[in-house]
Amino acid sequence: MAEALSGHGATGPAGEATAADRGWLGEAIGLSRRCPPSATAFAVGAVVVAGDGSLLATGYSREGSPYDHAEEAALAKLDPADPRLGGATLYSSLEPCRFRASRPRSCADLIIGAGLRRVVIAWREPPVFAPGGGAALLASAGITVVEIADLAPQARAVNAGLLRE
Ligand SMILES: [Zn+2]
Image: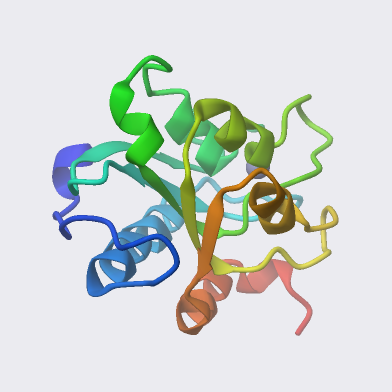
């Protein structure tokens, strides 16, 4: 699957979103369209990219099991000892979860544990299935969180059936 994604180049500087960041986030949103449907969880896509623009892993909601989250699925494909993780960026169509019922570790916890230093998101988690707060938790751990809000409508559109708006 990784081969199907086009390269977008090196990830952006810490707090700014570049054209490459927008391209990689667009890939994450594209992955969210592959998720098996669910009435109780959002469809989310995630990609992890090294600082030099190498794609390290991809994931999407319910990729391998009904409980999989996108970020979790992507991080599970990585070697925790990979030295590139410290310079890698995780792109997710939705803010990583801070609270979850299905498994003990939230995606924000997993990202912190993986040693990533930068996360780029499109859409803040609305309080439909769980309270948000993942971005704040990441920031409190010293991780740079970049929000590209003008891509949020695309990430939301994939989940239109779950939203009452
Ligand atoms: Zn999650």
